[in-house]
Amino acid sequence: MAFKPNYNFQKAERARAKAQKKQEKLKRKADARGDETDGEGGDTADTSQTDTPTDADTTAAGASTDAPTRPDDA
Image (cartoon, rainbow, N blue to C red):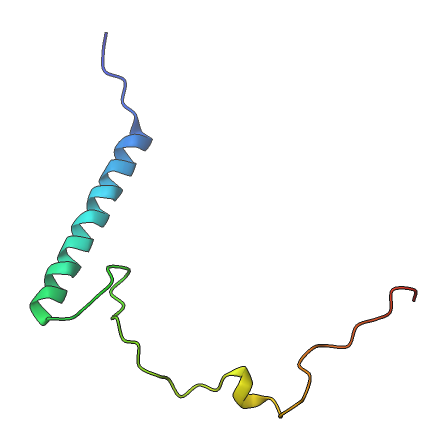
């Protein structure tokens, strides 16, 4: 009996191989640069503080951040 091609499987295998090759290439580049990466898209493991304000910085002391709610009987 002749071989029946499974095009979807073959396409998925090519995509998987391409993604694996790309990850290996990125890892080699990062190793060559000496960067510390977590392997997720090339983000560096930088944990320094940012200058963005937090909720505690933007709310007044003692101010309630909860929105007013309607009574249940209304």
